[in-house]
Length: 302
Image (cartoon, rainbow, N blue to C red; front, side, top):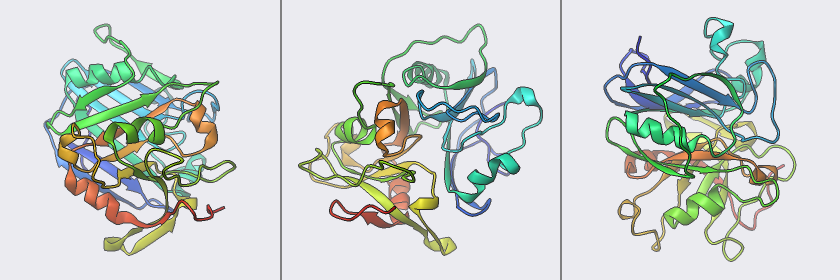
């Protein structure tokens, strides 16, 4: 049996999915890469399929599947997903307990990786204090845990992964304090801002770089648009500027997919993001999806 990211034509691909609000429609981007076999898995979600919720551990959701020859890492934003393998057949997002996910936008980022990258992910995933709900770890799998690791997919396209620990006493933002300083660029951020204490868009001198909330997304090819109040996905794109970090692939655009919102409560929780750092086409595609942003002097939407 082989476990990897697959297209709908059963071709092994690295892919990204954005689920649209109000139903099960979606758009996705993929690329080709050879298959890798299964050996173990780890599933984590701050809201488990059985309804158990953590408000203190990492606001992180994902699946890691692997064997000695490689595997995949899926990072997503959907609560209660996927269902526990011990509960039987995979059900997808189809049933009563998933109505919230059907109504809201979500993101799913799956990348295929070689063994060395999988080992780096294993190190990374320990940092944010994940809320694990199911795992199968073969005896050969090893874990060591730095704060950040550079990941390279099996197809050779570089990714960079970021993570921050749960810090109950001293909060900091994954975008403002980790990702933006590394790239030397501000970010336009799509995240879930419903609820109290959403962080408004911020600009210098309040912050070192611009951190701008996405207000509205529009997919021209599908003639579909929606407000951020119905979008639970979490992704961001870098804002071009003349001072970008010279070590960052010649200053090319970055696009990141993760599991954290720009909410004050999440400044104290663990989580992270994966970033494309040299794929101009993906960066341009996601920048084009942004129809409206919240400026630093705008009144945040409620």
